[in-house]
Length: 177
Image 1 (cartoon, rainbow, N blue to C red):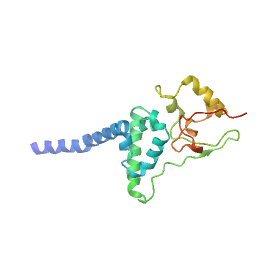
Image 2 (cartoon, rainbow, N blue to C red):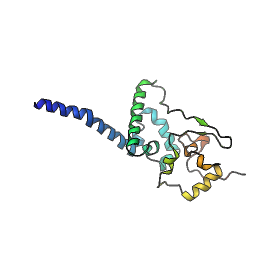
Image 3 (tube, rainbow, N blue to C red):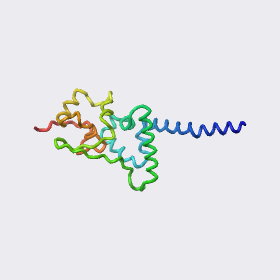
Image 4 (cartoon, rainbow, N blue to C red):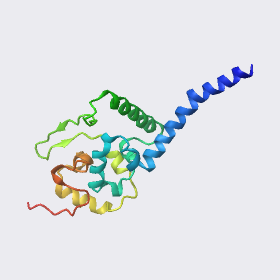
């Protein structure tokens, strides 16, 4: 009888506790040491270097907070994504990087082309303590660059690839009218 109890306990540990610990460890590592965790996969080295080089890393230190919603749903989405990338890692050509989902181009004739974003504006606007972002200056800076600012996704300009060679927080000069 005692060996049946031990087997049940071991089964519970294997089926429930170990996966829970693994998921919690993943959450903690992505949230607090992502510059080490996210580059464990060699496929992520280039995107992480672009993130660091763009200046984004100074104000946006937590990958998970930008790329996933808060709470249980975001946590589950993050872990599903990690599992998907892990599976993809073993199915792909080892010399090819893992590519993100394709971002469709949106073209509006009165604006520069923009791209769909994995990071919605609502997450960009949710930060309360962002160095170098003065709320009163943002409207003035952005209205000189963007027509119809309310409809423009933040990531159209502020992304890891930094279109047109832009960098975060470079001084903005007014364009001649």
